[in-house]
Image (tube, rainbow, N blue to C red; front, top):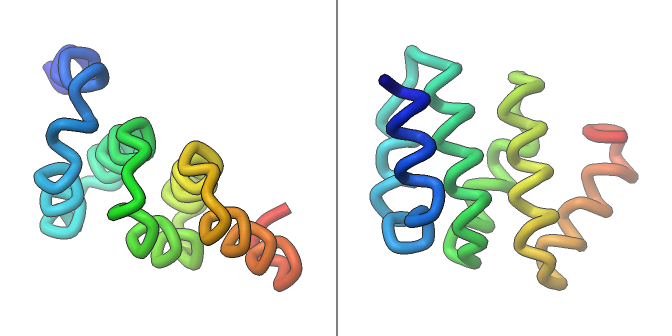
Length: 94
């Protein structure tokens, strides 16, 4: 059911980025769901998500960190590239 919902929402992530970010912040128990939400937020390519990606870039959860990296790459903005550079220089990511 979740996978079907993910697939249905994927093409509309941009329209729902605020709700997706709110859901991500509320969900604390289900790391799989948090990963899917972060992936959807990345697909939205919204500059509003930059602070969330930066926060998760420092996460202890490797999966969430990976989706944060992907989200920053998809943003492809100067601030996003700077955050990725800082994370690489500090050894947070490869």
